[in-house]
Amino acid sequence: VQLVESGGGLVQPGGSLRLSCEVSGTMFSNYVMGWYRQAPGKQRELVAAIGSGGVPKYVDSVKGRFTISRDNANSTVYLQMNSLKPEDTAVYYCNRAYSIPTLKPGDFGSWGQGTQVTVSS
Image 1: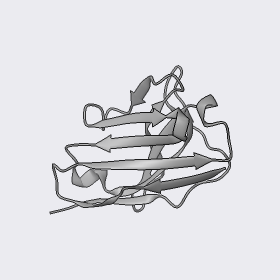
Image 2: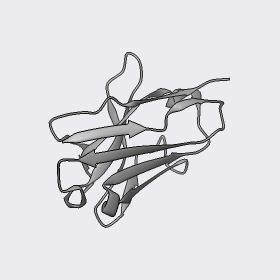
Image 3: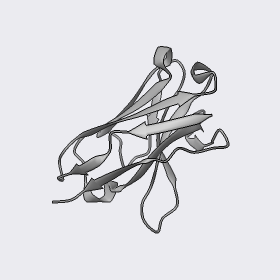
Image 4: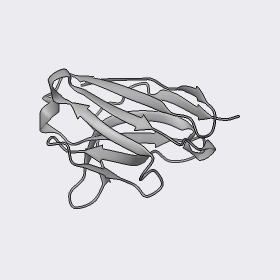
């Protein structure tokens, strides 16, 4: 499975970014997909996930600011990030996840290179 994340960058606090992740080598529509992030010195954490039918779930720290969506026809998952804060600074990755009954990390056995998001004035 190949995962290619893009869309990161440097943004001021309060700004927005839209991340994309193209997935190949698997039946994308069969899986719950998630966005993860890893800040320096911290463990990777799952922040949002979306089922094949489009039902999203979020951790509390991003709820109301981030929106996850997916395009099954193009095997792509997105993360719209608004009202960004310095604590959102991290490398962001996508991978499979679990969302029922609660958010739980998973993976396809491989990870992409991630995309760096830096929130700073």
